[in-house]
Image 1 (cartoon, rainbow, N blue to C red):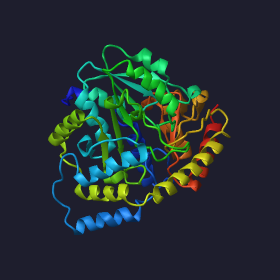
Image 2: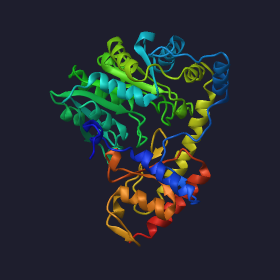
Image 3: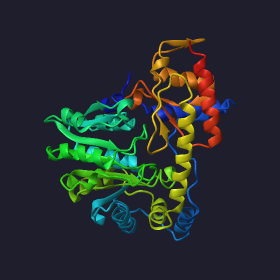
Image 4: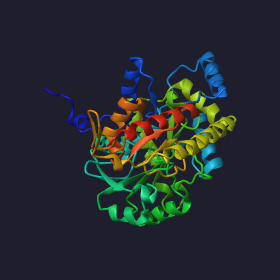
Length: 397
C-alpha cells in the first residue's frame, strides 16, 4: 500500500539527479563514464572564500543564524545588486536561503494558492513545474523551440495569461538551453506584464555571471513591474560553491516577510560558515569569476563546433550557462542492437550504455525533442565525449 501523501505522488523524480546516479553506479563497476549530466562547475571554490570559511570556524561562527541570513551578508547582497545590476534594495528585502533552489520554492509557496496558474516557459529547469505542483498550483507550459532560440515572445506570454495566472518563472541565462534574454526581449515581456498587475515574476538569475554576450540584463530593471519581480540568485554557479548551499531572493518587503515566515518553520537560517564564506565571495576579488567565465566560453565554443559535426543533430549556440541542448529527433525510430530510440530519454540511456557518456533526456525539461549536455568539464572530456557520442549515433539505423 502506498501511504505517501498525494502531494508527493504528484511529483516526478529529478531526471538530472537520476542520470547522475546511474553514471555513478556504472563508474563504481569500473566503467569509464564521462558525466555530462550534472549542472555543476568543475572548478574548486576560490582560495580566498575557503580561507574565509576556515577563519569562520576558528572564530566560532557555529550558532543558529537569523532566519533571513546574517545582516552583513544581506548588506553585501544589497551592494552587489546596486553595483552590478543598478537595482536598489534594502537589507529587509533580502532573504538568504539554503541554495537558490529553496529561494525559488519559497517564493512559489509564499504566493501560489491552490488552482493558481504559473507560466513556465519550456524548455525549463526540471524543478519549476514540480514546485508549482507542491504549492497545489497548475503549471502552464509555454514552449519555445530551437528555431526561436528557446525564448518565448511577448505574444506567447500574452496568450498564456488567464484570470487564474499568478506568476511567471523566467530563467536567464537558462538551464537547460543556455539562452539569454536581451534587454529588448525582456522589455517585450515586461510590456505585457505591465498590463497584468496581478502577475508576479520569479527571475531566476543563478547563471548571471556565466554569460558570453555582455552585461547581464534583469527583468527587474523595468520600473512598471519592479515591485512584482522576485530576483533569485546565489553563489553556487558563479563562485563554484554548489555544496555550500547559499542562495537568496530579493523582493518587496511583504514578499520577503512571507518567505522568512515560511523558512522559519521548516529550515530556519542557512549554514553559518557558508554565509561567512559567501560574504567573502560577494565582497572580495571577482577575478576568479571572470576566469571561470572565460574557461566556460572556450568550452562552449569547443562543444558547439564538435557537436555541429555530428550528422542529425541540430545545434544552436548557447549565450550563457554551461549547457548544450541539441535537437535529436532525427534519430527517433532508429535502432541498434537491443535499443530502439523512441524519445530523447531513450537516447540518453543509449548513450550511457553504448558511449559511456551521461547526458539528460529533454522530456523532463519540457522539450522531448532535445537532450542536455553539461560542458562544465575539461576540454579533454568534451573532445572524448563528443567523439563517443558521434560513434554511437552512427550505429543507429
